Amino acid sequence: MNRKYIIVLGDGMADEPIEALGGKTPLAYAATPAMDELGKCSEIGMVHTIPAGMKPGSDTANLSVLGYDPEKYYSGRSPLEALSIGVPMKDTDIALRCNIVTISEEDVPFEERTIIDHSSGEISTEDCAVLLEAVKKELENETYRFYAGTSYRHCLIWDKGEVVELTPPHDVLTQTIGQYLPEDETLASMMRRSYDILVNHPINIERKKQGLNPANCCWFWGAGTKPMLSSFEEKTGKKGMMVSAVDLLKGIAIGAGMGVAHVEGANGGLHTNYAGKTQAALDALLNDGYDFAYIHLEAPDEMGHQGSAERKVQAIEYLDGKVVAPLQKALEQAGVSYRMLILPDHPTPVRVRTHTSDSVPYMLYDSSNKLDKTWNYNEKEAEQSGNFYAKGHTLIDHLFEV
Image (cartoon, rainbow, N blue to C red; front, side, top):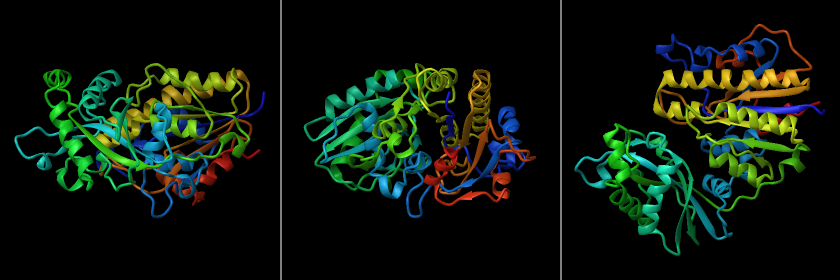
């Protein structure tokens, strides 16, 4: 059997030292026995995934980790998600992300309300699809078409639209929304109207009774044009499988001609189907002829956006115990030679509750070439290693080295 290659991507996993964690980052603080063991015989270092002048999104960062230079290939976030949903985009279409978010409901003008939660309490896909349907009935027309995605993440297609500057909701949590509404009056009006449609929807009335954040407003962002990615297999010589719960990563994979695993119960949250995602990667590598698996875990990023150090630590511990450990065990039992790269795409520090452009730590393990080291995998020691990749899209070439 040929050598296998894996990337385990902890979205937003990198962070800053946190006083409540004894001055450690969540990655350094978390109990991660599997990664601790691997770290002693792996290469660690830092990699810069966000090109200068580009925003630190999961779109640009994951393109970079997959070997696609964002400066060459990035055409906007939402078009990548549209690919995953199966949206038939025309060259003249503009795709926008449509989050259904939580904004405050006090008796003030819409512009004076506050954005509370970009994910509406990690609302289920089923409930949010019902809410989006209510919005579609009122707002959809020949120019603007809505498409349901996963959980709170949906898509708006604007026929013959413009790539307008829009603010990601997770960048302005707890802030008054007026200054961040679209300058395009039609988009801003649709956001206002969506609140009126959703605020008293039966699903939201029930959510508030249960103490859950209501999903009460559409928020548009991430505008872009139809993406044009080159084939991953032609570029790398490796047949790749994407394992992710989120439409962005599935869309990148579809655009790159990779396989996409469909894992029941994978939701992008803290309590996703870790076992199912791990098994999907193993099936692809050991049974279905794939050379490469990309396992994307969204939870560290979501917990960073929530500002919860405790839950971010838990997300990292789940990544270690429910993904890295069983992957290592199964691959070794199968007797295959493999190289595994573990890293975040970007930091999502608990302090700021949004993405930053700082470099991130990576760990590269080779089952056939175990190093003899004393370090642990975390931000501080990875920086001290002296290993550094200034251009993130070149790191995957290192993974694929013979």
